Length: 188
Image (cartoon, rainbow, N blue to C red; front, side):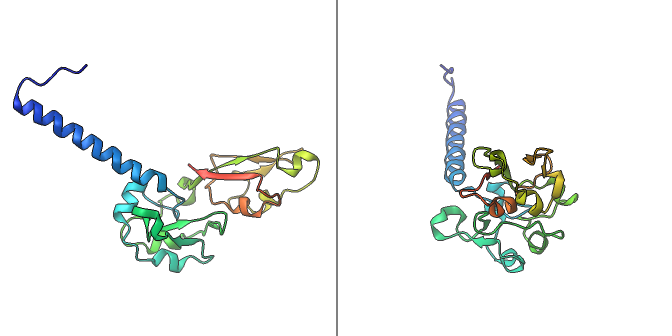
């Protein structure tokens, strides 16, 4: 049990500190469940939500229309740009037009380009992957915009994921021939 404050000032300082901690925790709980895939170069989720003006410029310049506007049901994130990799994956545009057009700093193209972008974490389910059942495939490795730095095929013809090179775009997930996809992209 924590010691009780012995003076009024201590009491109010402790009470205010607990109130601020609770407010921060409640805000994080409201934001965290709605966390979603953001365009490349996105700030942390809370900073992104505070900085994004919901102007739609990044949505307008996406050449493959991968960036969508979050619906009203998204709560605090309503109107913000997000990506649904299952519908249309980010194709890793070399010049990141979405981040370059952002004037608020919600999206910022990193100085080192794509090498520091990690929109999601990719996993492989070998039970679904047809290469583990003796069927030649390799579609995922062929469509990967990052190439062998992120996804390659081993000598046995099985996909090999390289998390250090994967940007989490989801192109391989949508290209996978199995249903559901053998590759799963989750928020990183």
